[in-house]
Length: 464
Figure 1 (tube, rainbow, N blue to C red):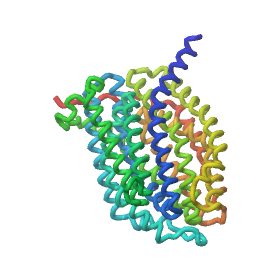
Figure 2 (figure 1 turned 45 degrees about the horizontal axis):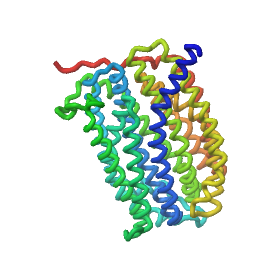
Figure 3 (figure 1 turned 90 degrees about the vertical axis):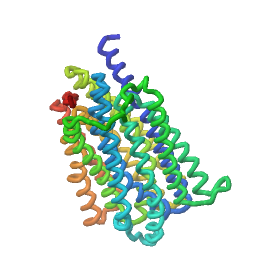
Figure 4 (figure 1 turned 180 degrees about the horizontal axis):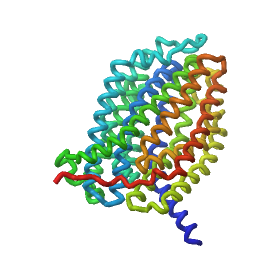
């Protein structure tokens, strides 16, 4: 075995070692979300549509939080590469402060603007679906799940810290425990099992909130009981000081990333809203599509996160000579795996919608949309790998343009025009919007080839 082949195998092994626990954690989370979806869907199409709308709105706040933490996580990964424990403490404190601030803002926006936001998704559809009932179910679900924003913020801060240092197992375990609580809670509270009242949509929301608190408890307690494993957690709360220069650097690099995630999540909500112009049946069909497709998407997001961690640590260690080739190999490895996911999704596309208690029309629509999503997976795999690579070197303004600005300039206008100014059926409309990922891949290839993302971000000035 040549040195180059051995090095490549070690690189792929390192990537999978980091990515697989993330896949398991996020995969189980999405699987339970899918089961939630199915359980609520068994109550009826209106409850399923109401919960789906809130899921779209909550997704914006969750990705905004992820973006805020990811910007700081770039610095954490590079500090870990340099074995700078004090630098890691600084970034963790900043993570907590920022995550709680984002959660407060999200709570206020969703609480006070819930009626107009939900109303954006409600359109008549030839008698399919009841808009008043859907609004009621959506509000009922939202009023409870908002409480879960705060424990979610804390657990995500701890999770981002550990993932940035290469430990993805503990966040996985806390996530697995949480989804177990969520699944059991759903079974008991939605349908009224084991003597509990049948709470329907409210039961699903209560189970979700309980799972958030359990996830927070597991990851926080474990981390602080194992400071020998995580020495940077020693005396992390002894003070809240973060060097001003580091805050400024994190703000410069992290703000575009936070805005990117927020606007990208908002773009998903905006695209869904454009699809919803075709009626409530499309909201239900798209909900079924994403419940399944999100599980497949977990694989490529996890691999992208792993690429970002590996490349970030190599940049922190000063390996600027080989890092470009390593990034290229890791991204192409992800694309190769994407064809397996494509085949699996096509094979199951006609089976999965049959699980739902809804109309044949909605099931048929969901099958077609799942197949279209599957065809776009290789493009999505490359674009995701390129995004996390560019981000690892601190090129967050470029990633902002590459990711969310692309969606708002290309994808959303296309969906808006096709949905409002043509009679194009939903399936070809969805196809053309998904295929814009091909343009994004070309842009990603150009940006990676330029190599301007190869940067060391770990310099800061501490207070004397």
